[in-house]
Image 1 (cartoon, rainbow, N blue to C red):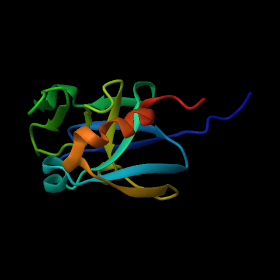
Image 2 (image 1 turned 90 degrees about the vertical axis):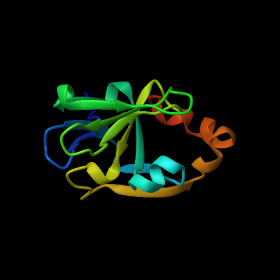
Image 3 (image 1 turned 135 degrees about the vertical axis):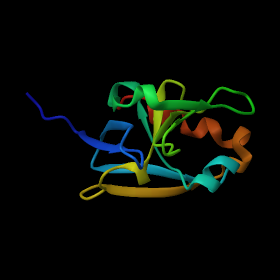
Length: 135
């Protein structure tokens, strides 16, 4: 029996009404996006496959916002307004977790790379691999 290369890490919104967990490897590739939404919100993306994400509390508190193509499902706590995670347009088979909403990043090698979301059409496809399970 082998140990999983992932550790479940908890996080949530500001008021604590929405909670989630994401199974992350020790080294995480994250993106700091400069699109109109992420730049204003300070969202740092950790994209994970569906199987490595779960909402543990507050699904009934989630409100949804969509814009432009209406494919991305921006979810935020209807109480405090924080977007801890969402269903991204680039990865509709996974989730994007806000690294800033994790309870702790202790022990996590968080590598934050710039992502040019202002030119999303030219760059969005480069994120598709992040919601796939490793081979």
